[in-house]
Length: 300
Ligand SMILES: Cc1cc2nc3c(=O)[nH]c(=O)nc-3n(C[C@H](O)[C@H](O)[C@H](O)COP(=O)(O)O)c2cc1C
Image (cartoon, rainbow, N blue to C red; front, side, top):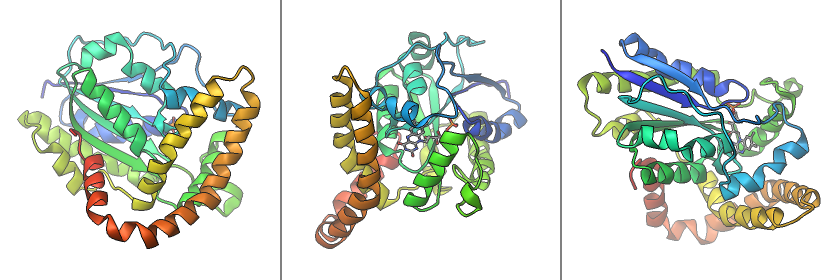
């Protein structure tokens, strides 16, 4: 197979690099040329984070403010397939990925080109996904497939473990009590099955129905409670981002947001979910199903 594939992504811990390696291995085995490229912000984000550096990027993430990235050096002028690996930051596309989607060279490269997206999240990836999907549509990419990986542990547990990971750089079990943070190794290795599906499609040069085939293999799973929380958090995050970015001295506002987030997640979310289960969910079954379906699709 003489097909050319570009796999482009950003990573701090290396998790997305591992995902891309597992995902693209079957493509390379099938004979395609896979060119792997990392997005490099001119001023990279320090990893591990400090508490304040972590929360300080929130306004730019949520408001979609791009930052300078090193000009990506593509070996080809055209590709048969582009694979974009991204992660959500504060329910938004991470700043490096958002910056790539604003890069004119990348925009013209993916125009009229088949694109598969793959995301790695703690577990709240829906709002970021909708924005990435919209941006790809606006720049004229042929968005043919999506895979969403996430940490399967309960929401409060992964909230604690991700902070341990992000603030120490160690993807290890916190206190030897908590589970390992991030996407499970089995799920990372399991992306090979999606790579195989794409390899056979690439050989046959047939993309229709790819997303359905990926969905049948559970490439995307939607958890209702997380979908509910994200929908409520979206306008609130936007309001916080606007308030913080309009202040000269942002530090106290960022601290206030941090405390808000802890209270909202550990107190607000369980209360709202209980009220929803009693008063709303039983009467909005159809609307919920339609929303879920929308998140599963690449073209909406
Ligand atoms: C600043 C920041 C904000 C994040 N916000 C979210 C989020 O809103 N939802 C989520 O599921 N994961 C979130 N994550 C986790 C990332 O999506 C990702 O899974 C993790 O950072 C590993 O990515 P890496 O390959 O770059 O190391 C966040 C991570 C960072 C660094």
